[in-house]
Image 1 (tube, helix red, strand yellow):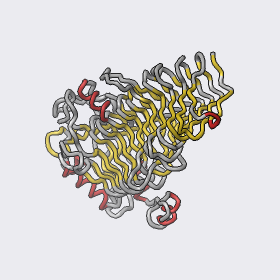
Image 2: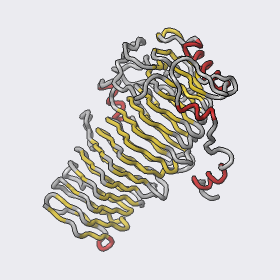
Image 3: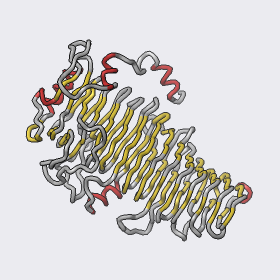
Image 4: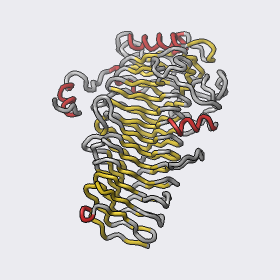
Length: 448
């Protein structure tokens, strides 16, 4: 059976699932936040307000039913905007955003450093449209807080679990947002203390933009996506809790971005602080990832990038900044490693014009038969007892890079197939442990 790729998916789906521009779809682009307006749709109503459907803005009464009635009314009218005025809305159940419908709060940018109360049901004096999510506590597999259909949007909201204790080990909750279908958009949203953040599965051409917060277990998961998805300006930091219990849990178990099968994923200006893995690439249900990752970063991570699987076109990572170190001083015999490429990964992984610093055990370790490449990169502050880059097998390319520490630079294991190490600069003498002899091309490297 031929591999299921974006190209043959596009061919089979050309008349069934591609983007269709309709008046209702265009209506998502903008509307006044005031009273409902008109459009020539089925019911003539362009926008609804959750308060008009009985939603309590003070967070005392469950507003799940009122929200869903407003969303269903918009869907009945052919699509439109469901406004969420500034306030606190208790959502004890789950919500479904129908096609051509936007659930929109007042924020035109992510709210980040919110003054929401950390250990109380009362959320404090922060402005904005805040969903106080309480459903599914203790069950990460429960129905997501918000499920999105195709051509829908979630905008301008802060999602907060008021019963999550900021001073103890976090408790599981279901996904905050689950995207499924073509052209789903999440924008200007804060995932303040969600367990699972955003799941984009079978969410072709998804757009996730201007998202901040402190997801506790997983920030964003992408899988089974066969047409170009976009993730832009997403930053995860300890904005909700800096307690030892929470930070240690995230450092030991948290993962900011996980990519399974996704074809031509575009990721721009993303960042995370203090997670076990900043970026993890896995074998998803139908395959792995290829994509373009520009201006991405991970600080205080155990692993900045973990590649378990990628597609044959590989991963292109440019202008990245990566820092792995034991910032909580947890101790242990093994120090963090910035980049790990594991078996059985098959696709190439290439870093260009990126910077790596620590203190960490190593900058990178290649453990399988794929290709790992570094071009015009800077390496700082690794453990002097180890090489900055170690290839146990596969192919290694290091060109035009600078090793700024006077310590061993590269180790080539006996089963490495080939290596090119040229045009690099080092501080002090070159220390390259070469076990493959003439299969490595090493030259034109300078020292200070």
